[in-house]
Image (cartoon, rainbow, N blue to C red; front, side, top):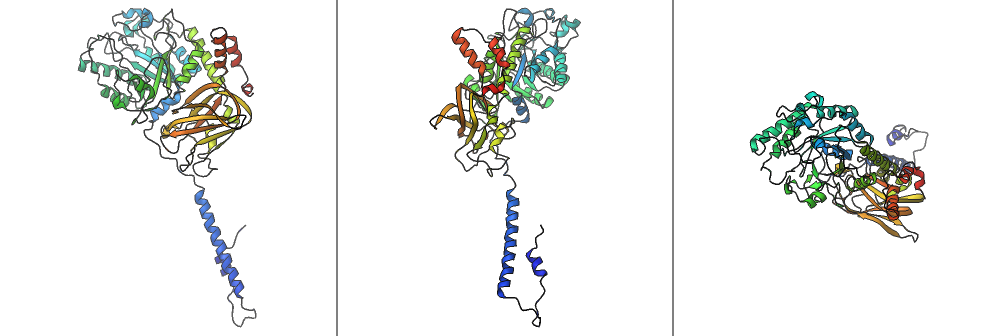
Length: 544
């Protein structure tokens, strides 16, 4: 409907003349005109105010430090497959001497496509190859040494393992990383500072310019006792890597982009900050507890990587067997579930293939994860919050965002509120034993402490579990709880407001069966009939 304005109203009135046969308007009519004009004015002001309030508030200020785009991409992959392969594979050793004849290297059935397929099909988004381990043997035909595949009988000396893997990864859409050991037990110039640093940079240049995009460069400070003293020009190395492969992250004991978690067991600290102080760390000599926990006051963003092998050793040994799928699940909770990336070593065997027993474990591990985490019970709940940034109905920062599986949408409470609570109200009682919480880490890591409560039969809030840091992902496992009402409370945060991007409630039946199995017989659940039955179980059966 088109409304007349006050101006329109006045312009349509004829002027009154003294000699008009119509009477002059009374004062009440002038009052009516003024009233209508005022109403129209107020309506226009209200409309303008409504238009302004329809704009959402901008996002809160990120709290520094924050990750780079490369670090974000790295964190989102969650898991990577490490491939230890070389002459050690054929000599039943871990640290080669550097004097083994290259003729021992002859993986007659080598198939890098198989490695990549196993990784992709079991949920790994990145593969990292030991292009050169401590023995100095190179899996590519380096121009700077003859101690490489070109001196081996494999493919009559024309093979290139790095190229085979790079091609297979590119076709499959997986990210590629390379490990180039600083310690070299074969190269004669090792121990001569300038000469060896030039040698190392020459080999690094080969790897970063021949094989397409490299997403991670992995190096460490490992060196045996009594070895030659050697000063590494790490700053030069890092600068060259970032220059030649700007999309790559660099891993070492002390960063600069990702750090070692401090052990080779694949387990992070229950408190684990991505914040770090690089000036407090030294490659090859960093306090393990500092690496494990990070630093809430650290000025640098250097998230942790948890490396562990599926077998007792890092290289393949015929006498060794892989860990169980349940053991890998436990490592997943304690690495990815503690704000880290899980780097799982799965070494190819002497034929050049990943062993079938390793593949079986990886497949079961994948099925278990899918069964547990493919059904978020929280999605069936009505969710609300103690407050919301902007208006309560603002979809940009509303509580419903925590059910969207993305770090780029999140719940933000009002900055004036001192209570930071999410409420979940279910239509029926649910049973669960796993909590998942995520932060939008592109905005910085904020949460220091949090806890989860359930409403008991007395109508009182009772503690389910509590934790410290969250970061990219936090998983907490506990005894099964039955309830229809939950609340997640952020107790302490580095910044106001704390932000939550995802909230998950899950039922892990596998850990329950494993616990029962240990109590009754002590037998392994891996590959057992209960595991297989549970994998096929309908997710709706999680409701009790």
